[in-house]
Structures are given as C-alpha cells and as structure tokens.
Amino acid sequence: MSENSGPPNFVRDLVAADVAAGKHGGRVMTRFPPEPNGYLHIGHAKSICLNFGLASEFGGLCNLRFDDTNPAREEQEYVDAIRRDIRWLGFDWQEREYFASGYFDQLYRWALQLIGKGLAYVDSQSPDEIREGRGNFYKKGTESPYRNRSVDENLALFERMRAGEFPEGAHVLRAKIDMAHGNLNMRDPPMYRIKHAHHHRTGDTWCIYPMYDYAHGLSDAIEGVTHSICTLEFEDHRPLYEWFLEALALEHRPQQIEFAKLNFTYVVLSKRRLLQMVQERLVDGWDDPRMPTLSGLRRRGVTPEAIRNVAERVGVSKRDGSVDVTLFEHEIREHLNATAPRRMAVLRPLKLVIENYPEDAEEWFDAPDNPEQPEAGGRKVPFCRELYIEQDDFREVAPKKWYRFAPGQEVRLRYACLVTCREVVKDAEGRVVELRCTWDPNSRGGDAPDGRRVRGTSHWVSARHAVAATVRLYDRLFTEADPLGVEGRDWKEFLNPNSLEVVEDVRIEPSLATAPVGARFQFERVGYFCVDLDSTAARPLFNRTIGLKDSWAKLEAREGKPGS
RNA sequence: UCGGGGAUCGUCUAAUGGUAGGACUGCGGAUUCUGGUUCCGCCUAUCAAGGUUCGAAUCCUUGUCCCCGAACCA
Image (tube, rainbow, N blue to C red; front, side, top):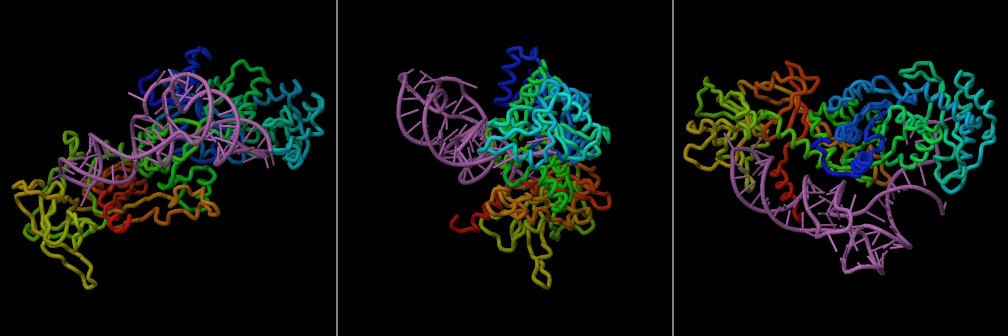
C-alpha cells in the first residue's frame, strides 16, 4: 500500500476488504475500458485515476482495454488519442494494452458452449418483433417462437451467421434467461448481432460482433480483472454480467462495482454531445481549448497534476451530482501558481512616456521567475522612456479605493520604479492615447526611497523592446450551470458567445518570445497562459488557461449593482 | 403500474451506534512590489415522521423526492 492513498471512499474500502480477506489471492487488477469512439474527457480522468490509483495503492496492475465491439463507431484516430491522453495524464499500462476485439475468437467459442448448454439461441425475429417481445417496464416479455430451437439448429445457424450468409438484422444470438424478469436486461439479451462492417483492427474477419454485456465481463475474466469499476448506469447490468460468468462456469469471477460519474457545472460531458460540437463546428475540434476533453485541457494549459488533484478532491460515491466548476478552477490555479514562471505582458497597451527619463537610455531590471521563490532564478526585463501599461490600469476619474493610474497618482511599475501620472493625452475622439509621467530615479527596483506607501503596482513592457503577440482569451463554454437541465431549452442555446476572444495587439516582454509550445506562464496580474500549438517565432500565440482571481473587479461589479 | 440506485452545509465529500469534520464557493480581516499568493476568522447541513437505544446521519418502520433502465450502443 502506498502512502498517497487519498481520502477514503467506498470502492477503496471494498477493495481493501477483499485484499484483507485474501480474495483473488489478495491480488488487485483493474482496467480502464474506453470505447475508441471519441476523445477522453475530464470525466474519464476520474475513472482513469480511480482505476490506476487503486491498482498502484494495493500493489496491483491496471490494464488499458479498448472496448471495441462496435465497428460502426470505432476508429484508429481515437485509439491513438486515448493512448496519448492517458500517458499525458501520467499513467502507464506498460505492455498491457488489450482490445475486446482481441478476444473475439474466445468469445465466439464461449458462445458455442452456451448454445451447447441450451443457454443461448438464435432468434430470427425482426428487430421490431424482438423489441415488442421484450415487453416494457410494466409488461412482462413474451418468449420468441424461435426460443426452443434445438442445439444443433442453433449451432448451424450461428455458424452460418458467422460465415456471412445472412444480412444484418436477419438473426441474432440471444442468451436464454427469463422473458418475465423484472430487469429488462435479463429478458434474453442479444449476445451477437450481424454487422457487415469493417473493424478498425479485425478488418473483415468478422461479420458478427458481440454486444457489450456479453463481451465486457468475459474480457474482464480473461484478463484476470478483480474489480471491474464502472458507472452507475450499468448497475442493473450487473446481474447479467454475473450470469455469463456463472453460465460458463468460469473460475475467475471479477466483481463489478459502480460509482457516480463526474459532472461539472457549466460543462457538458457526454461523448455524443462533444462529438456533435466537433462535427457541427461549434468548436474547433476535439482539442479546442474550450473543450473538457483531455486534449482540449492540455492545449488550454491545464496541468495533468491539476486534473489528478481534482479527481481526488471530488471523491468517489454513488450520489450523482454536479461538482462546482470553481473547484476545478481552484485546482488549476493552485498548481499553476506553484509552478508557472512569472512574466509581464500587456494585453491592451496604453503608451506611457516618462518625461524625465532620457530619450536614448535604457536599463534592465531584475525580475524573479517567482517572487515567492527568489532563489529559483529570474530574468532581466528592459526598461526605457516609453512603456506600455494596461488600458484597464488607468482611470481618468479614480473611483474610491483605486490604487492604479489616475492623474496625479503615484504607482509602482513592477520590479522597476515609481511613476506619477502628470498629464493625459487624448486623440481627436477624446480617447486616452498616452500618459505623460515622471519617475522617481531613487526608486530604481521598485522600492520607495523614503518608505512612502505606494499601494498600486502595475505590470508593463518596454515599448522599444516588447514583442507583438496574439492572445486567445478563453472563458467557460456555457453560460448556464446546467445546460442540459433547463426545461424546454436546447443545451446549445447556452453556448457562451464570448467563450473565445482573440486579442491581437498584445505586447510581451522579450523573454517570452522564444518560449516553446506548451510552456506555461503567469502573466503577472492577468492570468495563466500557455504557448499554443500554432505559435510561431514570427507571431507568438498564447492561450489563457485561466485568469487570476480579481477581487477588484468583484468589488467594482458589486458596487455597480445597487441593492446587492 | 415494474426493476435498480441515491438523499449530510450553496456544491462535492467524511463520520461504519459516541463532539456532524474537510475542501470549494461566499462574506469579513491581516500580510503583500501581483487588488495574485499566504494566513486568520465567519456563515451554512444529516429528506420527513414515527420507533429502538443512555446515546441515531448511522439500526427498524412508513412516507417523500431525485437519478438510471424498455439500442441488434457502450
């Protein structure tokens, strides 16, 4: 057992009890079983962390198994993306990469066995008739007229299904269980259907494919999985999961355990809808930084650590709910705050001229990468007579408690010096285009020579040295906490029209211009940013991962709303 | 009208018959060359009603509400 076992939860308790009791010889084996029909998202991350985490905690192993029993939906692209994302998240399945399709032969032989035992039969009803015969929640099912075919007839028919003699839908292999069962899943569920489709791994070898319920538990059994962890909606599939193991009298019996999947406010997590957003170009692909996919989060600049931390923080239970997305945002900031080097960048430049600073002079100030760990190193930032500051940091009429630039107000330029705004220059339309300031030459480095208090500190870049860049400001993709839960409204109505804002005229300090793709920074006083895939030396491109908390904006917003 | 689950601060989650705790959020305050970080404080919860017990979030009974299930999807 490792030390980093995290908070308690019912799955761990179950596993711990099994280990203590010596079940499965005290062995723990889990698996993460994605269907390669879409990209992994933050919800899958919870399952990945749970499965790999449990295995490592109890000295066991976790397999990666692609659950690829439906050739119509599965593609190699997804297999590649899934591998990449799990590795990025920080987990290693070593050589234990499996495919349900790798078990097709064994599964087929077992199906033959079940037919031989009189526990499976070929049904030749139409899909409609089968649905009809299954009954519904309130009405028991009725037995198929084909239910009592002889073993030989079933064997022959099933063999002919496999040989490709029938069109799709002509026949299906069904488990013979109980058409009157209260659980619909037990009313003679289909085990195999005919699909004349090309499979991404088995090609055209098969034209019959096993169903999830038949394939999954048996795949677990083949791999020696001890604890098969899945989500709540499979709870009433468990009797069927167990029925197949029992019917085949397999000695190894994996145990299915269900937990509540992860959900966040202001996020939609369903492969179907994510695929829809991609296909309808509501976003720019699976790795659009607004997507809750692991690829999207990675491109956004979110760290794997933050994702693992949030997976641990949300816990594991059987209550379905929705985690406040601010918890995720908190974990993102927490890790980035500890690891991202600080830099200065001005998103919306306003020119600032220091009138008493020589025209042709310049100097370079020391700036630490992280002021809380000055020993961790730093860089020099250039300074000269003309600088850029943030437009937002100036107000011609200073509100109450405004510490930033305003006529006559002294402000600190971070790591540089103290300056006072003397004059405001406007263009013909009355827009503020330039601040004329003076500096205190004795404040070099940023400290007041006489200990006078200067509350405001602004970031800045040297006009002469700054590099132009583009920044993409990302915001939540949805404007509604529960986009799926608003009665009478389509979830797509709640897509945030401002989820992406491109800012073209950004000025960054020179050290930022050569940062490699994927590098993450804190732009001081602004937020966390990372270098996008499409960034070039000629035009650096940064994605905003998340903004810094802004208590000034909060205060101002509140005061702007009387009565609140 | 059926089957399977679930109900603890606003949110997520602990407490396994013995002080209802933590995290996030929110609200105060301190510190600060980031209105960031950090630190401190505050607010707020056992679905309901009965019962068992010295003692119940926990056990029993009844009820209420919520989620999942009727693909040849997973």
